Length: 154
Image (tube, rainbow, N blue to C red; front, side, top):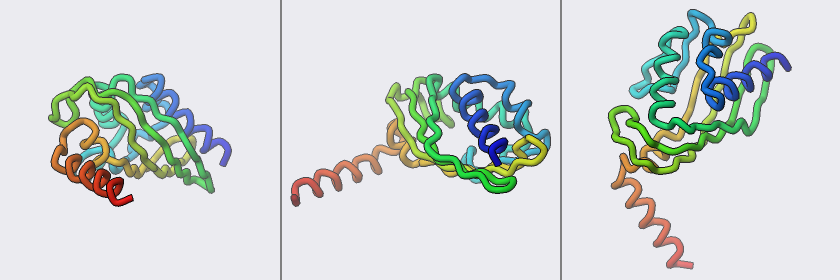
């Protein structure tokens, strides 16, 4: 279990914080699959596809930093809760750069076999990200109005 926790911490530190793309080849199984990183529920298959996903996130948020908040490991499974921060200085999934800072929460689970991630399932606060980069202004307006309404009631 300690090895699996170390592997997942290495994944976040090297891949996301150090932008060390080689970590994908070292830690992601050649036939590995990951869910929740792409829109419309499209899965990421294999290391080369993961490299494309990583590149698009890093192009949109080059200073992306992920803080691992909690890791739970049991058997060949790991679960992680994290906070991602950065600045949206590049286009994200067709949405122009906003130059806004972002902070989102996320969780993922991983299945590890023979020292490689073979399956990942990710849950990211994509709505929060879209609001922070200005892609969902109506939702942001509604949320701001509700906050204002809540403070005026007190």
